[in-house]
Length: 218
Image (tube, rainbow, N blue to C red):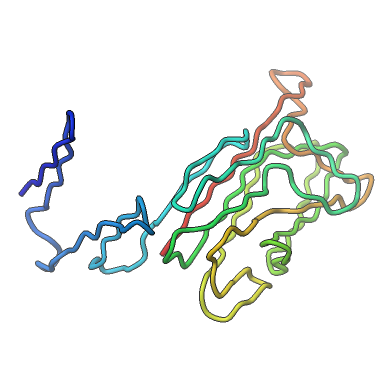
């Protein structure tokens, strides 16, 4: 069976029902109310978890419209070299307020790293607002003029007892800022972010823009 919705001036949208469902069970499609604008939840599927919202962008200053307002991505325009103190990783900082009903926020930051000195050794911290997620601490070490793409992934759980060590919060009803910080191990080990060292068979410095992606599950 097909349900066809005609546009007010032209065009249409059709919804096709399958001939059968698994086990002959009924399925329900729930349209959002104003508080969940743009979110459609299938309430009778075996798993109650759905992707409520998913978006991403190169870190070029783009503004993305989400269910709870615009999100502005960082704008990375140059390489970043650390000098021994913890500082924000350019491109990793994002403030976000997920849709109502979200139980997990997935954070994914993809970036390029190359040697400023060989070897390179760095330490990384993850923050949710001002709280460090201590169990997300990482160290990275590369030798022999290594360079390449890297990724940092974390899942922030919502609900239950708060635990800052893993980034769990009891609720998330306003914008919270997710970000990475880094530092070099020492002056002889500092890596460089967001810029190539070699290109087309010779040395060459070119911007390697990071990307940032968010997924809300509920």
